[in-house]
Image (cartoon, rainbow, N blue to C red; front, side, top):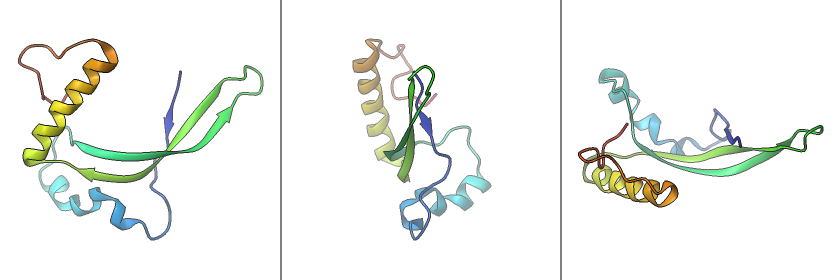
Length: 100
């Protein structure tokens, strides 16, 4: 199964929904391997292969906000729990709440 994500944010006056813009200077000055963000998406469209009938949803990012500080610790704990519920696999000991 495949789900695609559109690489652009909605056009128009939506700059206030792009939390990456506010962090531009910090990202450039201190680049990190990973950045943690909360992303809100909606289904933009569903492509259908007319031969196989396979349908591929394409998601549109509606809002993106960077997460840091105490919120980051809380979010990573939540991500670990959600991942474990989805996969049945717990994080390796010592890697709980680690990005990667």
